[in-house]
Image (tube, rainbow, N blue to C red):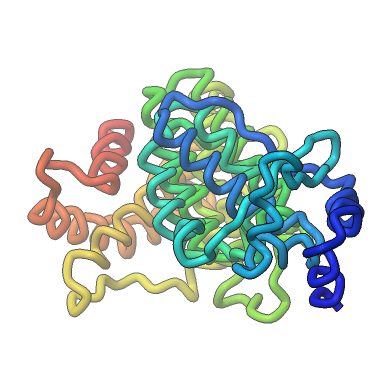
Length: 362
C-alpha cells in the first residue's frame, strides 16, 4: 500500500504532509551527557539512524530508506519531520549499509568508553531501544557488558537492567549472565576492602538478585532445568552463602538468628553433589582461571559458615569435608596454573579475588 501513496506524494505535497503528520505517543529514549565526547556521538548516531526509524510508521520508514523517495526529504523550504511524543524529529535519507553502526562493535566500544557511573546510566535505555529496533543483544554480549559494569562501578545499572527485563531482555536465567552478575558483586565488595558500607551494599545487591532469580520474567521455559537453572548451581547459591556469612562475621557477631546462613549452606551442599569438581587440563589455563573465579567465593563462604553454624555440628562437619576434600585441592591447583599465565600486570581477576579471600581466611 505504500507505493501508491508515496507515488502520489511526488506531486501532491499535502499528501506527504498528511503522512508525516501521523504521530506516535511513544517517544525515543533520551541520553544524558557522558564524560566522553566519542560516546555522546555514538549515542546520537544510534538515536537518529536506528532508534528514530524504529518508531516510525512503515510508510514513513519507506521515505527514509528507499532511494527513489529521498528527494521528498531534501526540500529545504518544507523539511520533512515526524512527531514522536512531544519531540519533533527531522527525517533524512538513510542507507542501512553506510549509516547504521554494528551492534556488537558499538556495545564493545561503549563498554570501553564508559568510565563513571553516570556513563553507564545510558546503557539501560540504549539496550531497550535496541530491542525495539529489532537488534537482539545475545547472552554472551550481556556477560561482557555486566563484567565491564562490575569493573567500572556500574552494578547499580546492572540491577536496573535486571528489573526491567521486559525491555532489556537481560535474563538472569542465563547462567553465564547470572555468574557475571554475582562475580561483579564479589569484586566490588573486595574493592571496598570489606568495609561495613561495602558489605551492606553487596548484601543488598546479591539478595536482590537472588529474589529476581525466582521471578517468572527471568525464567526461560525452553532451557530451564537443574543443569542450567542458576538457583540450582553451587557457584550461584555459594555467593549467596558467602555474603550472608560475611555479613554475619563482619557485622553480626558471627550469629545466625534467622538461620539464613544455615539454609544457604544446606543449599550449597545439596547442589555440590552434581557439581563438576575437576579442572579440564585439555582446555588449558582458561578452565583453571574460570574455576578459580567460580569457587573462591564458595570456599570463603563455606569456611565462614562452619564457624557460624558450629564446627562440631553435622552441617559444620559436612562443610569441612567439602572444603578439605574438594575445594582446597582444586583451588590450589587452579591458582598455580593461573599464576603461570597472569597478565602483563601480573594479575587476573580470579587471582585478585583469590588473594584477597586467602588473606581473610588466614
